[in-house]
Amino acid sequence: MAEAVSGPGAFSQRTDLPPKQGIKELPNAAYGEQQDFQSIQQGAPMEKSSNPMANVVQMNAPTQRPNEPVTAGVDAGPGPGREMLGFKNPMDSQLEDLTMLAEYLPLMQQYADSQQSTGTMKAFVKFVRSQTE
Image (cartoon, rainbow, N blue to C red; front, side, top):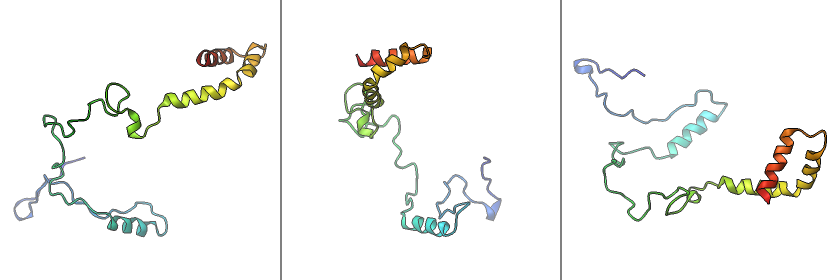
C-alpha cells in the first residue's frame, strides 16, 4: 500500500497520524443488515486515546506481572497451563476416543485377523491395542 503524501502549503496535512475511526459499512449487506451493523457500532465506544501506542509495553520495560511465571499459559514449568486460556488439552480428547474404541477392540481384532482385512486395519488395531493396554 502506498504511503499518503501531503499536499503543498495550505493543503498540507499531517500524514504520520493513525487514520480516524468512523462508522464502517458492510460491502455486501443484505436488507436491513447495514442499519443493524451501523447501530451496533454507534453503541460501542470508540478509541479515545490520542496516542494509540500509549498502552504498548516496551521490551526493555520492567514486568507488569512480577508474581506471574514466564511459563504461565504453557504446559511446562511453573504457573498455570493452557487451561487458563480455555483450551482443552488435545490428549484428553484422544484418551476419550481410545477409551471408546477399546470397547470395540474384540470386533476390530476379529476383522483384522480375517482375509478381507487390509494392512491399514491391522496397523490401526495394533495401535489401539498398544494405547489401551
